[in-house]
Amino acid sequence: MNTSINQKGDSQVAIVESTDILISNEQDALDLMASVRYLTGCDKFIINQWNLTEDFFELKTKLAGDVLQKYTNYQMKMAVIGDFDQYDSKSLRDFIYECNHGKHFFFVADEQTALDALHGVK
Image (cartoon, rainbow, N blue to C red):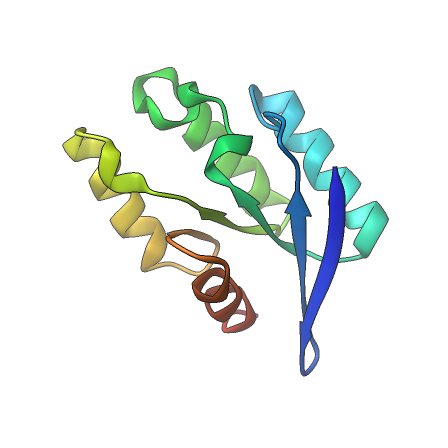
């Protein structure tokens, strides 16, 4: 896993790069959060869709909700870059819509959109 920091004014966003699945369960999500904070000092980060297990996108597994709840509790913000149109689930589409209209989690198509979203929240 490689990390870099994008800074805009006083806002810093960690960009996590890896070809591995980084979040396959709730503990992985906590470990990733701790690593990002330790390595970069950031409370906002970007990962790619392929860094999440497919179970994350199956809402019935509750993994997405559990991860987002933990990150909210620890005041960590995350953007996921990917192509989410491939999923047929209406509940997942609604979930992504709600996240994208909030202030903690974003599911976007590209890095610049992710940076804009995360730099735009305090």
